Image (cartoon, rainbow, N blue to C red; front, side):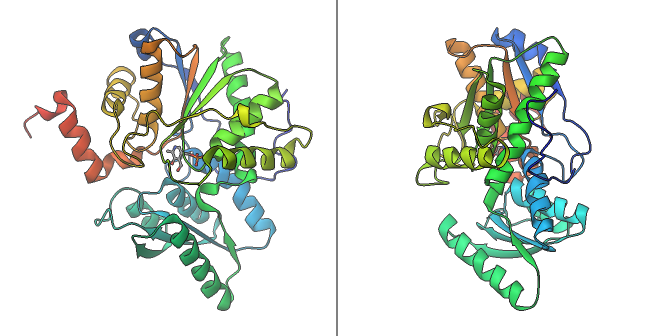
Length: 343
Ligand SMILES: Cc1ncc(COP(=O)(O)O)c(C=O)c1O
C-alpha cells in the first residue's frame, strides 16, 4: 500500500501509460564499486518522455479543470519542458503556444523540431533573459485571451507545487519497485534545474519517513536568485496539496553545483566520461545538458567514496540533445574512441 493515495487531492491525466521501470546497472556498478540502479523516467509514451511528463499529468489536469483549452509556456529552443508540453497538449487535444528564447539551434533539430512537429505555435523571441522571457510570455497570453482563447499559463518547467506533488508520488513508486526486487536505495541522484523534481522527491521521502540522501545535481545555476529557497517553497506547496501536516525544512534540500561546469548546456568535467560509460557499459544514453552531469556526480563521488550505495540514478530523460549538432560534435570530438573513426 502506498503511504499516500494516488493523487487523491491532485487530479492527474495519465500521459505515460505505464510505470517507468527501475533496474540494476550491473556493469556500471562493477566499474564504480558501488551498486547503481536507474529509475527510467526517460521512457514513456508521450513526447519521447522525460521527467516533465509526470508534472504535466497534474498541471494539465488542473488546466482542464479551470476550463482552459490552450496551454502557453516558455523556455529555450533546447527546452525539454516545452517539447513535453507540446506533445502532451497534442495527446489530449489542447492547443499549445511556446515562447522560445535563444538563437540556437538555427536548424530545425532536437526539441525545436519536435515542438513544431507536435503542432505547437512557436513564438521565437531571440536572446532574452528569463525575466524578459516571462514578460514576453505574459504579453502572448494577453494577446490570445483578447481573441477569446481560454489560456492556461504553464509555469516554466512546470515548477509548481502541483508538479512537485507528482514527484512525491514518484518517490514512493520507485521505492515500491525496488522493494519488489528485494532491494532498497540509500541515495538518489538526479539532474536539477527549476526544482519540482527535487522538491517532490524530498516530500516523498518525508511521506515515507525515510533517511534516503537525495542529491540534486544543479545543471542551470541561474534559474532563481535563491535556488534552495525556491525548491523549499515548491516542496511545501506540494505538501500543502497532498500532506498538509508535513513541513519540509531547508536542511532537507541537498543541491550540488560541483558538476555544473561553465553553466547550463556548457561543458563540465566528467560529462564525456559519463556519456561514454553509460553508453558502453549499459547501452543507456545520457545527454550533455542534464543527465550526464548527474551521472558525472555519481562517478566522481563513487571514486572519492563520498556516496553510499545502493544509488538510484533518476534518469530524467532529455537525450534528444545528443542529436543536436552542437552537442553531437562535442561528444564526437571529446571521445577518443569516436574521434578516431574515419567517416
Ligand atoms: C532531462 C531533464 N532533467 C532534469 C530536469 C530538471 O528538472 P526540474 O526542473 O524539476 O529541476 C529537466 C528540466 O528541464 C530536464 O529536462
